[in-house]
Image (cartoon, rainbow, N blue to C red; front, side):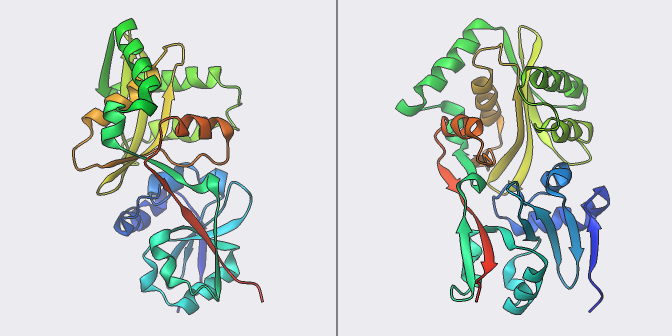
Length: 288
């Protein structure tokens, strides 16, 4: 066995990690190279190269964790025990993997703010049902008030998306260091390099909002960012709806990621009535 190597996560790890994470096929938003790279500073991500490859980082609430880059059935329990000497817990672990952790030896913790919000593409493309009537009304207002169009977020429209991002940040109550402005700007700067895809909407000929994300598994599309100018009433409803309507039919779910225990995000994401709250386990060794 070679000595363990620890490297700060960077673009040079794309070839190592991109396909490994795709091969895991779980719908959790973290299992994406673009997500890890864009939020590398916020989480102090490192790549640990040993017999297996792990990501080490810090959660938003300050704990050090290890994230596997391959299914756990390829590792023995002893390997996992040894690795946990390097972190407080394994995270994010999908519920389907929990059978690998004997309950007498491992403790499993779920936190509400970690869970991803999943919505069926059908729901977001129709806003059907009584609980979403306000979304339908806002969508109708947007369509009737503004001359509108939705377009793919292609290279020639990246500048328009950047103008939306700048306007969004100017309207925000947070300074850029406290918001996701920096990661979103870099996502636009490295759009093709990170293999991202998205859509942009216009109102009265002006760029009004955009989304960008990527396929995280065969049936789930994760949206890493959704930014809009709120002076266009109903813009977010139109943005999600128009993007859901043009997604290829193989996608069943849109993943809008977690709320990080932030009340404004929780209210916003809950208002679309998620179909699944996708739990992420924190798995640690039980204390003697």
